[in-house]
Amino acid sequence: MRRPSALTDRNVAILHAIVQTYIETGEPVASRTIARRLTQDLSPASIRNIMADLYEEGYLSQPHTSAGRVPTEKAYQSYVKTLVARRILSAEVQRLRTELGEVESMRARVERSSHILMEMTRGFCIAAAIPSSSQMLDQVDLLALADRRVLMVVVTRDQMVHNRVVPLNESIPQEELHSIRNYLNRNFSGWMLSDVQVELEKRLEQESAAYDAILKKLNVLYEKGLLDIGDSPEIHMEGASNLIGIDLHLTREKMRELFRALEQKKKILVLLDRFLEQPQGEIGIQVGLAEMHPAMGELSLIGISVDLPSGLSAKIAVMGPMRMNYERTISAVLHVGQAFQSVQA
Image 1 (cartoon, rainbow, N blue to C red):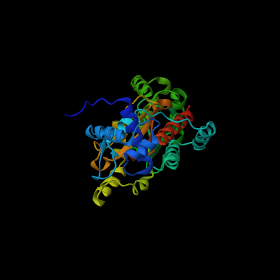
Image 2: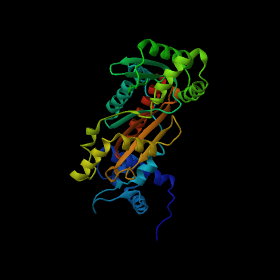
Image 3: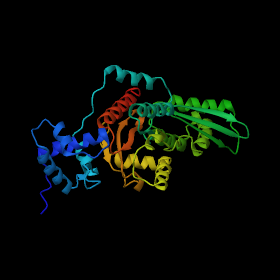
């Protein structure tokens, strides 16, 4: 008869000691090893009995008849629920903020974040800045080009720059483009883009006499997508090579499939959206990613979502083996995420 599935405090302590030992050594864990590690006065025989219970409940596996036990995905899921981020020195926190504050563009900041995280964890690291329709307008610039084309530049308060070159049926002189630019910046700088679009549509319908000529030309550019910046995210990934030395029990073809999946930014964004649904500012941990791709079954994801000014959302994450150092990775993700957020304030 199978034993009840609820774990006692003693069983949980032994299970988590097994997980910690396996993370440190990578070798199947024997009862004698746990007996030496625990402060409780338990004999190896008693621990073996508890390990047998844990095996029956699906928390442990036994790779060989005579070998020790190895934690399963279920064991890691139990273990990570008990973890909290370790505090790092205030000097290190300040270093992170300074390093991220040295770069001005959002693209550079995203890239720097993933690089810092990779150095701290030696995992596959992801940093993404995802725009939303509630971004705030900073300024617009318009530049006349040859062949009746116009370069439209929209800068949002989160320091993202959106460029678009559009062809026109009739050229617009640079002086008139300056007037349109000044009109937009004077009237709408600091507005949410969604609100700018609503207000512009009203004004374009009314065609105020004072700005009749400007609004007519502005309408041409608006219909060409002047404020339609889309929702393309800034995303940077680094450290995929760190997964090569990990024993993921994959064939060469499956390993190639894994790396092909990691190269696709759309799949990475789906991964972040699916497994990082916790409230912003809280660490999310997903043990086992087989739902995303069969080759990711032995990988875990640790990440955080933070809201930035102007409606931008940032996601900072590390993907690594189930046998990763969760405490260190949680701390790294939390502090890089907080530093990323703080330099945007």
